[in-house]
Every structure is written in C-alpha cells, then in structure tokens.
Length: 67
Image (cartoon, rainbow, N blue to C red; front, side, top):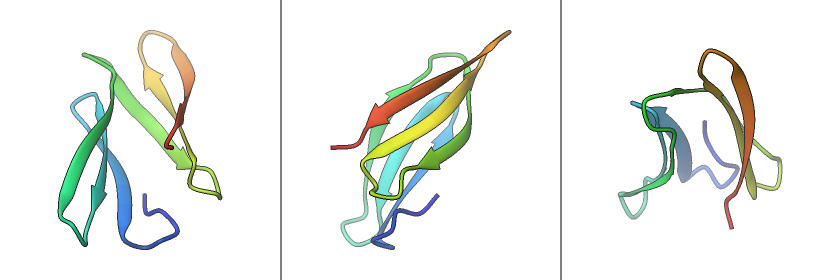
C-alpha cells in the first residue's frame, strides 16, 4: 500500500510489516507478528498511522503510529 508521498509503501510478508522507500532503497521492519499472519493493511490519510489485523484463531485490530 503506497503512502501519499508516492515514494514509500508498506507491505507484509511472513508475519512482518515493512516500510520501503523507493528513493533511498531502504526497507525497515515496523512490526513483527511472529508466526501469525498480517492482513487487511490500511494507512490513515495523514500517513501517520497504520492499521491492520493479525490473524490467529481470532482476529485483533492493531494500530501503529508511524512517526
């Protein structure tokens, strides 16, 4: 999912969420859900908050401040 600056995006794989910058080519891990799956990723309009669900036998909603 792209941030509004069109240079950074957030993605998840193998239970971790990352933010990547296409200009600097840097990737930074921002959340580790362990063995669980990260799903339904969204970004607030001001790009300051990332929200997502973590799939277990139940789903929880997580909120992460990107500042």
